[in-house]
Length: 302
Image (cartoon, rainbow, N blue to C red; front, top):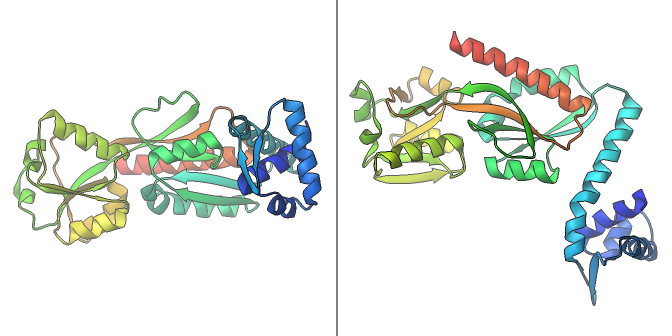
């Protein structure tokens, strides 16, 4: 089995067209055909169905594809390690929730780029479950994940910090007059929440379900900024990480209520796949994130 065959196979699996594949791998179409046939003969199974002018992956091809991609990726990392020694370089793909990308990482990214200019950092803002899928598929190298416990068997992680979660309202909301706000106080209230899959949203859902509390209305958003605007406009209550709303709280555009229900705070981790080669760029980024966010944690506690 040759590297060239794997390269052609993965491109054809994406394009599902022999002509476009030949163009992308800089060869003629007949060579693409012969390389794929040779690979299929070696594996003993067809990888593609030829349906007239259409091309489709067989079940065997679908099963083989992630292994071919990982083999090529490992070879790329190995070549880079030989070419550059231990100096961090090359692309580094990172998945993270919007709140982390927007409010926690800009300062880290600025410091990282100054220290390691040969690394190209690519962020993928995403929700928790797609982030895990992207780690599995190799679409991202690292992920920052907000959840109290990580139980995925293929994931290795380091815990960075605990993120404080606030229950928020407009300064004129009636609940601001209460000394503490219990889950039962949210009965009949309009809640402005992140989509299902968000770990701190799940905590609030469980707290309300345990006491059989039914909100008046729940509006879901895929944007933290949209939630903040709606809270500031008096359209309902929300729960968001403290770092996300620090500016609005200082400007008194919203108020953090004294929540007396189950704790909503959430742990933040940095994750990677257990089979992933930890490149110098990955290690350098992990070290810088740990140092920076742990420093934030100490400052917040003080």
